[in-house]
Length: 148
Image 1 (tube, rainbow, N blue to C red):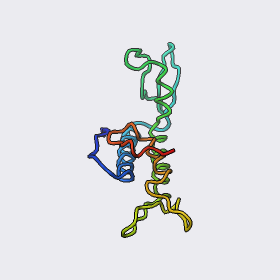
Image 2 (image 1 turned 120 degrees about the vertical axis):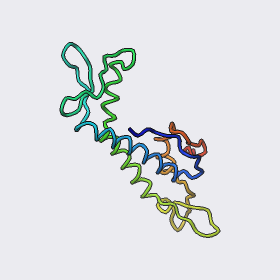
Image 3 (image 1 turned 90 degrees about the horizontal axis):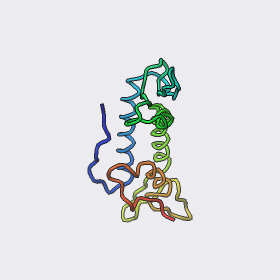
Image 4 (image 1 turned 30 degrees about the horizontal axis):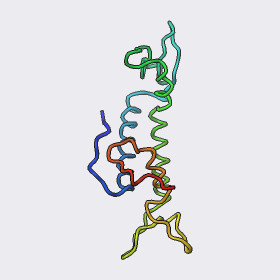
């Protein structure tokens, strides 16, 4: 089982985001390999509530009120490993679409947001917005937050 580990301190938002996306992807791949298909929330016999995979195997039994109350079931099902992998893909794609451009003696700028008339410094608003999805992860720095 792979866990979300505390990363080494990083000054670079792009590098940190790529590490966090890779860590989430590894967790989701591990979970995906241990179950089949889509996770769904179901009311089962006897009024029990469970999150199950396509074959009916229990992912989470939400009747243990002390540790996993029934209202957590829909949230668990919504975080099916396939959905998490889709989010990782979308976040990686956004980062790829907003490349960091570096030139000697100049500040870094965004290759997508900048044009001949204006230069948008890096990290750009899009990269900062992707960071919001990971701001609860260890190592996030408040200076990476989106700016008004």
